Length: 360
Image (cartoon, rainbow, N blue to C red; front, side, top):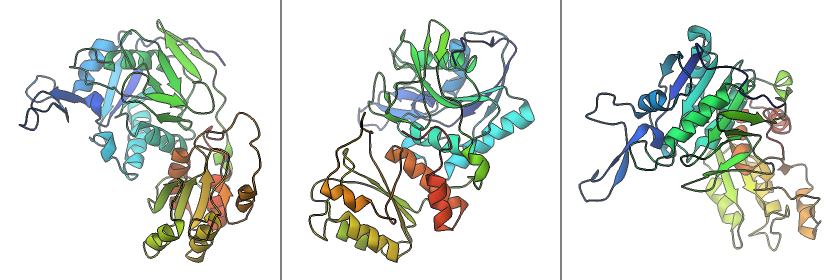
């Protein structure tokens, strides 16, 4: 599919969701009284205390747009909690149902944007409009801010994207915006091209106001599963490293009502089996005894079939569920799966079913 800005923004009804983040902040030279510059939400003492609304006026490439605004949360994105994701999803659904929004633009901080995008993709599998998240590396009142380029690219993308959830980000003035998958992306830099598309090139690009998009159709796995609506945050994510004492980790998890664990394996799909203290096999057995499900993932999948090692056989067990998605997305999906059902087999079924293009 390769639409090229097939809709004009003129006269369209756009839903705007404000959530905070750097894009909704100002840069204070002496914010804490100690001379150190800080980024702070809002813009006190100005006629328009919401920087995002200034951005809308300055960056919209179209004329005659009708806008409806919701602000379900106002946070720097590092302060987001899983309970905030359904609030944003509800704001989107309300804009579509009550305001007749034909497209949704979400302003969001960049640090946890990919977690929110994944959650929204799972929470809104049938959303009948395109939904774009964007943000900024620098507040819009700072010289060289990328905020204007990001918002302009987002508007052009909304004019041509099919229904679904996306991230759009340029990262610098006068740079093309890239369209990222909501479930196969991660933030890797604090400036410039802040996001990386994992295991696949970004499915779209906005250059000189023209959108090129070659994304796959949305999966329909949601038709056969319980609706994902609320996360259960009783999930722990662990990244393997040499010397990680999984036996001690298991003891830490005991008694804390943890229902799920996502373990990031080494890139060759391996994990230590040197001794019970470091053994993934032993850790999974211990988790199973307390009713905790364990899912294994890798940060980036190999281009071909990885070599098989002796330690790989430890993963060929019914109680270790290897999932074909990046660990960040697996963590979000597991929270939502646990929030949807208490049946372990059903949780595994949800994790094993592609819902939003998350499979590598």
